[in-house]
Image (cartoon, rainbow, N blue to C red; front, side):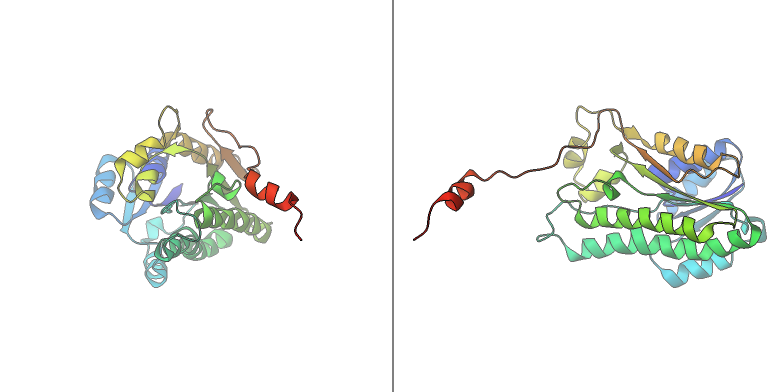
Length: 259
């Protein structure tokens, strides 16, 4: 197969590239960090076309993918992995620039990539779009506001792609990891290594290879099988109870008669 992976320079993307390369599939690797991209290409012994590219740049994405070499043009698997979270501030205190960056990357970047690659898949009658979502798209948490919103969009977008693609032979999977130790938290906390490491303290989280194995498994099913969603968490993580804020003072005030 020819497998295109965005955000291939670290974390899930790099692990997914390595997993498919281990089975000798050809790769198109997209990432912004040219040095890391080149280093990864040198380490993998399969045909690779590397594209230093920012998925947020609509015109650049369209032009670059329209000019893929003939031997890489028929993409079999598109892995929309590029994405990030920025900040954990409550919504009234969050940085609008952070919100826009998350929407531009996690939502618009996926749209640009999918719209560029999908017509060829439909024309050939085969293909697989794997979107890397998150449990944050299913379960809210304080500070997850826009990040969770982008991943909820990705979940619904995947389902609607499935509806559009009935009868075309093209499959769609939304892969939804929970707590996983990569550079994710370091990016969220903008380089604060201490805060990032605290996220995984005394917990055995998922690692990038776990997500790569799930992506590879979904893509390796027979053509008549579509794995629609995979939600995966480490054993130490679970969905929490409904949150309640108890304010005794306010309750007492409500019960006090007013003249």
